Length: 330
Length: 308
Image 1 (tube, each protein chain N blue to C red):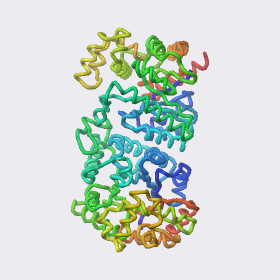
Image 2 (image 1 turned 30 degrees about the horizontal axis):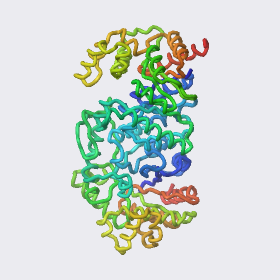
Image 3 (image 1 turned 90 degrees about the vertical axis):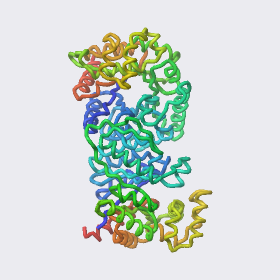
Image 4 (image 1 turned 135 degrees about the vertical axis):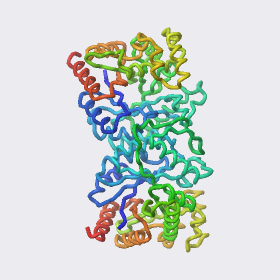
């Protein structure tokens, strides 16, 4: 059976993120993932710290921190601090970040696969108490060490999409955070498994976390908000992934262009039911858990519920986790 | 007069929390948690301290705006407040130049550094105010005359001096102090019943670190140019402060940059600072390094409360 977690984003209010953390164990939540909405809302690391402190017994991960937005030493130090606060419950999710977000921040990464690979490598070396001298596209270190007394083990999960990134994750990551349409997810899991096997690793060595927009329409979720989230997901979808889908390509490209020009709100009118079904999990609680089960059958080791959160979302989360518990026979 | 303690961020999180709780229960008003180049991330650590202490205010910093942009600083301060209430202050400073250069961050044009820092402080204060977080006091860490003078743009200044004579000079540089502006001192400190000051390497190293940060103008002002020249030469060769650099500074000079005394002596020192017009003293390393030393500080505070 797959693990079931809740996803938060930094743009949620502290009252909402605190509610999830404080109630996670009682709800039967296995983990909490925190996505960074770059520059918006709460600080990722402080939120992760508060979530670790407010929750009991659940895994807490960043999902993801964009690697080029922060100094690499800040990432290394924050992860060490959170790992210690969480006493082993923290996992470090990292990635390049969403195309739209990076463009908005005027951050350009010329060679994203290399940059992410080098970044993860240097983080692991720093956590192994090594002193590092290395110049790379996104960092420059000269005789830098964390001055750790002993090595620290921090699981690294990569939030990735494209084929080269998926292969990289299969080779080096402890887990992968995936998002995208079902057809793509099936392909992505295959690529990761193949890559990890080729690297001499077991398929189980790499966890597969699937985090899709979840829209519990049975509890008053506003459709407009749901469509806005789906528009963002579509806008960040690279062309090779769009090629895999049985959808009108022109329609998808129109959404991408609209988001790029006028933001996700402007693209809401272009999101129809067919696109919603391809990119999000929505409907009744039973239907949503059916889809989670389907993802589990495809090889997902963990599914993530939410966001967006609106309407009576607390009740929706409770009911969905009740449904999951029922199916687990708890 | 407010009392602060520089938390030793090189401890484990568990020990940091234990010592903060001792200080909090013992009446220490401020717990300061420094950031880079320490191994831990100060804002994340501030959350765990806030979760465990009840009364003390928590100071985040020294934080460098060269490492975090003003927007990021506002973001972590507002997140701390949203989750733990209006209990946080911020200490801003450029950070150690050598350490920053090792992680790819350059001071840039040194002649505009103070101006840039003041601009960042203004941005941070304005943004926090605009978002309704007006209880955050933004301090500037200062040692040189330009930074001291510029600190008037912040809510307070934490002066990196121990010697009352140097602190008096810093106050003269500040000039007329606006209403509500706070002035604090940040001396390396070792308070114990029978302190053997010459043997306390941690204290001597902290004193040497401050002394090596003294700029040309201050060295001239206090006749330290020649006295510190051998240590500076050694530091240029070694690129870090070690035993040789510390030993190159005579004991009398090191004493001007650190407080090594008994609880009674520390109270006398605090009284002196109060008399010359300071509002706060934060006891720097090594006072926060062990539970025993933190308890000594608490005992000193109790003695202060009994005799004040």
